[in-house]
Image (tube, rainbow, N blue to C red; front, side, top):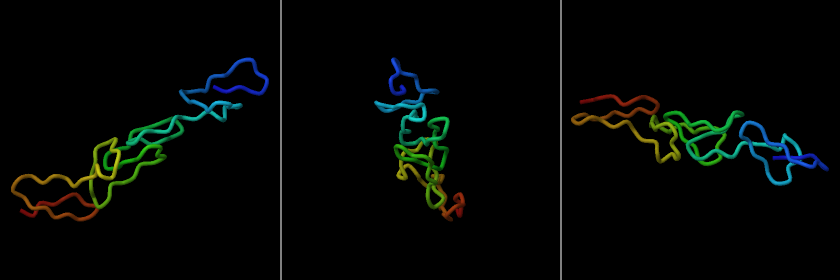
Length: 103
């Protein structure tokens, strides 16, 4: 909530936003920081897509390195991994390219 100097009541922040104690303008309203695996937009928090990750409070998602992949909502670079290889195959890993079967 927020209120102007001398106001007798507080105003609600719009669209699920919040404000710090002592806020005096609707401009002071903001979304709560996003948790890991999500990123902030003007509309609030959104889940990071596949093959990306983010830490708490992120404004964007980080791409998994070296052609690695991850599930949507990954919270750490440690969640990035190479695509598993089926039994009986060897893997040729090329950065930025999905794995190739070499037999």
